[in-house]
Amino acid sequence: MCGFIGLWERHCHEPGQLTCTATLMADTLKHRGPDDSGVWTDASVGIALGFRRLSIIDLSNAGHQPMHSASGRYVIVFNGEVYNFGDLRRELEEVGHTFFGHSDTEVILAAIEQWGVRGAVCRFVGMFAIALWDRRERSLILIRDRLGIKPIYYGWVGQSFLCGSELKAFCAHPSFNREVDRGALSLYLRHLYVPTPYSIYKGVFKLPPGCMLSVRPDTAPGSLMPMPYWSAQEIVADNLANRFNESDSDLVDQLDTLLREAV
Image (cartoon, rainbow, N blue to C red; front, top):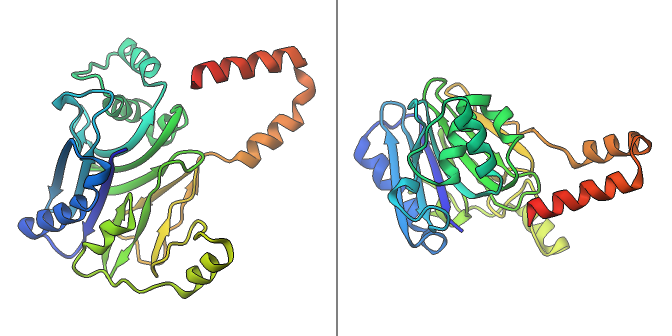
């Protein structure tokens, strides 16, 4: 399953405190990743990423997270699986990329370096939640898969930005106020769940499916705007507009190919 946290203490550059807080937050997700753990920090900007790993694809240390890209520009924590990473790896090897392990995480980083964040994500087939730190641009990018199979929560605690796979990770932050959002509580009583983008806690949100979110040093609390990279409505509208361009047998063949690739 795996789980991750992200922490951007923009006014705290004390390495020990940053590492301690990130470790406490990540350890609340041990049930999601009992096999390995890791924390990476850059105290010069106050950023920390933490991870709990359930080893599945690459059982070696080559799959350890947080993971750095080959150039050193990106640091990633990633939950889920990119099913077509083998095809992407072969494509990347053809243009000069080399790999040291066999994890899809390493392929994700190489793909982002080759095609950019949006270009790479649009090629991924799978279920994933990603927190990516861009050391050059000093930006933290959150990405959720098209259908929202893997969760990402995010929010502000004062001037500190938090993100993670579960709300209990937020509760481990010493400054987090567990104030219940009464509007979200009302939605829960109506629907028996808290719909996206809300969470049960005030000021904490779920990243919508098929969206990315970028946080920069000048990003102010309350100004975050998730940006979609994929829309089911657009796909349906496009297919309806072009449905007479292909025969029924061609469409059935396409569906059969997609199902065989996905399963």
